[in-house]
Image 1 (cartoon, rainbow, N blue to C red):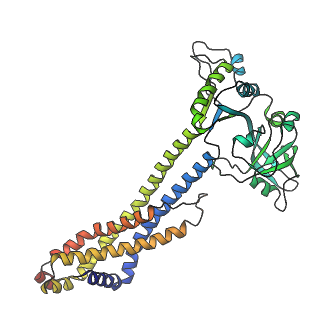
Image 2 (spheres, helix red, strand yellow):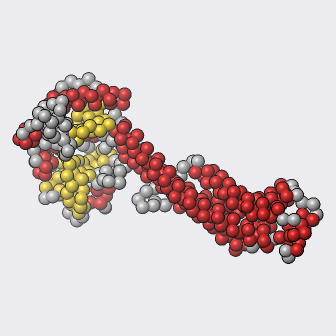
Image 3 (cartoon, one colour):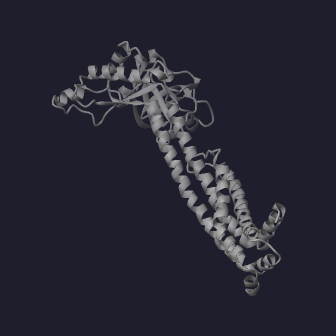
Length: 408
């Protein structure tokens, strides 16, 4: 039997019972669509995390006060002494002026969560960040309109703020936020700038923030001197490790951390964090793909059932073809071709369904279809058709002509 005859035979077999073929293809379609779409969701989620971490800058370090830190070694300190060994503005100033060779800037930050309101609209649980003007240079929180606050604002604890893009739209839906007044927990701030839209990690929305002078936020909300985070910018991405070593040595000196003490801070390298997140995201994506593959397997089992029924129904045809000289290989190829055609058509429909589904946001995640997922899913669907079609096809090929004709 030629290739054209096999195609024609497969087409006749598929269209002979349209409803049964459609239901079989539906199972394969769901499996293929699930594989592509869940891989796309996992990839989209990973992409969002990568964007969020990259937005922090790959040449920056984050120093945070450690809640588990302490000085519990042999040289244990008193509680009063421990209280002094925290991250403060004076520690930040000392780091900035100590002449560390691989450090370009040190930016202290405090943060809290408060209700922010305009004259008519309120937004709850908004992140309020107190920092210095260098914050806008060290991080990628760039000002899209207006300007950032200045060193003079920092010195005078001015009530000025730069707000996130989404917060600006929420509080002032009909006009510009620049020059307007927002109230943060009872204190009025003048909006001098609006940030460009940023990627969010999902834990906190980077577009729903208020960024104000450090001294003002400390005075109004968090208390003086102590800071929660220091963002350290290395001179370039190759100097991150060296900068981290310098910062740790200097912090140990400033905070009086001994060799047997536990440092009351943690230093996070954004590049390492990015690599860790990528590994986690890849594992998550593979897990989703494995779960979706189960539905594809179920679709393959359905192909086996349908092909067994088909072979039974067409026993007379098999007997006549064998009586006319058809070989086992021809019979085997005919039914394998038909099974592969069923799964291929179901796979194509599944690809179309997945591409349509990927146009919509799923649980806050925008799916990003992996380039290799479409040919992979189609190839696997055809392979499943062949694999699960082998037994029915072999059963048909083994039939003897007389046995097949007597079965009618």
